[in-house]
Figure: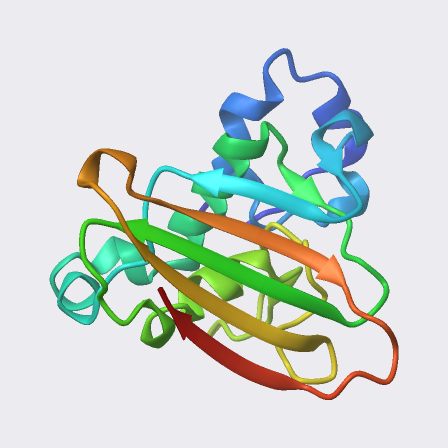
Length: 177
């Protein structure tokens, strides 16, 4: 049924593990070989911008954290990331040919950055990219969404995850450029 995790010995022996990464959503990060796990602050550019409300409604795949995990994996060349231990600030810079309210549709991308979710009906834990522990206010100091208008040929989304100083107030801020 495809809902199984793998052991480290199985993954170490695989000749092209990155090409099979879609099968690893039920495998904990501790089982992933270390050469496929990043760490530290994350700064990655995706070739897909965060969708507008219309795109979100018309293209169902854009609402899936698995789609965004795949995009982040392709852009980093890594399967997982060790989350920063501290509270983090997450910044999305969305570039597209028009401003479109990306701050409204950031949830699926934010979910993809989490370690995982236990929100499945069958109770199985899905493992996501893992750059942040969770998207709750206990873990995110702020979430910033910046929209830049350019040409469609340079559309995309830059994601940055960095630690913030302890004691920072949690907030969500949205900036339109």
